[in-house]
Length: 348
Image: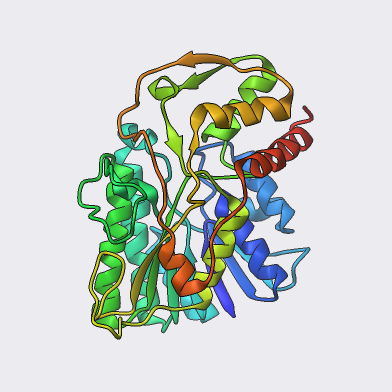
């Protein structure tokens, strides 16, 4: 297949591009390489897939030196004309939209960044898919759409009408927008609610990176909600395997006429959770990092942060029944792989 992946300088997009390239797909990647976090990490990811440093040039197609079937373009999703030109020239079969302004806490300080990237950018993707006969659009949603839901595990059939951060609201909006385009124009769309993704090449604003960096330097770490947090940590290779299976299986209207929050009987539309389904206490997560670094963390405890939730746990029964897949990498194994990568990259 010929696949457009947005956000290929990002954490998940980088891993997905490698996965699809390794199995022989043709991939075009786009990313705006913004400075939400260290751009050097983004360029390093691109370099791993053979994209030269000249990727910093806007709208210039860069050919990978490692993969003959991979090209990269620096582009904003908000740039509607450039995006449409790319779709017109490339004639993609499938699209996976992973580009977005991420981060719950950052959305409290920079709300317009989320509207521009996650709403304006996404409508441009939907319009391009509509007008260029895209056979399937898979896109990143988030477990944050569940807000303060307390019934566990969190199911795609549950109500998600009460987001507690603007980031979550934009992701819920993406799901609504996607359903509209699936219903009106027959664009097959699948939303992917990711649960706390971690692993090598991960984002430096996320807990695993922050904790590993601070502990290795002997600096204190911030532990929110006084450590009383539980997360469904999901290893990045498990996430990518789930995305790949989704890309390969476009949704169809429900033959049974069932309508719930995750599917539709009027449209080729679906939403999946992708999570490990084995929630871990935050303090146990920190302990696994300490064990792999051979150093004890200096913990500073803080109250719950606005927009955060105390617990997540994914119900992945749909993923199992529809796609025959369940993420299964343990936190112990995943953290071991991350710490090995971190030590190598940062010479610890």
